[in-house]
Amino acid sequence: MLATTGYIVQASGIHFPGQLSSDISFESLSTMKPFDAWEAVPAGGKAQILLTIFIAELISESKGDHYTKGGAFPTIVFPPVDFSGVSAETMSLKQNRELNNGRLAMIAIMSF
Image (cartoon, rainbow, N blue to C red; front, top):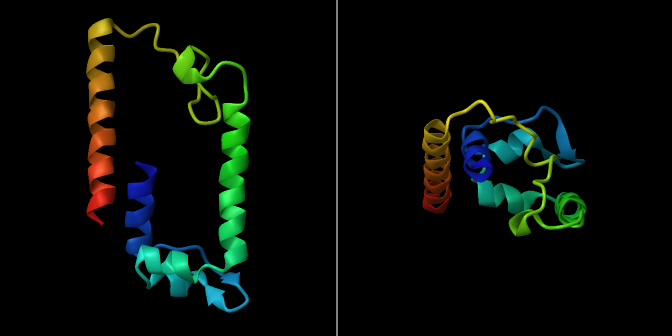
């Protein structure tokens, strides 16, 4: 869902003020298509983005049992929410809605 939202925001021309590097402004990137804008980012900027993602993944994946194998969800990605007061029927309905929203977001990002 974040990929689709990011793509739509960037394609709408919404951008940060200022410069990305000494010769590239955020405004100039917002006039490009998203994949062209990624190509215009300097190699050092791409490396910083990928390194930050790598570190976040490394930290969240290295804590005890993995969440797909019965461990706790990473709280950085999934903040704790108390669902103890929600009925099973309502919870099932909300889970199905969330699953369908995720599927729609995957279809949407593939359509770009």
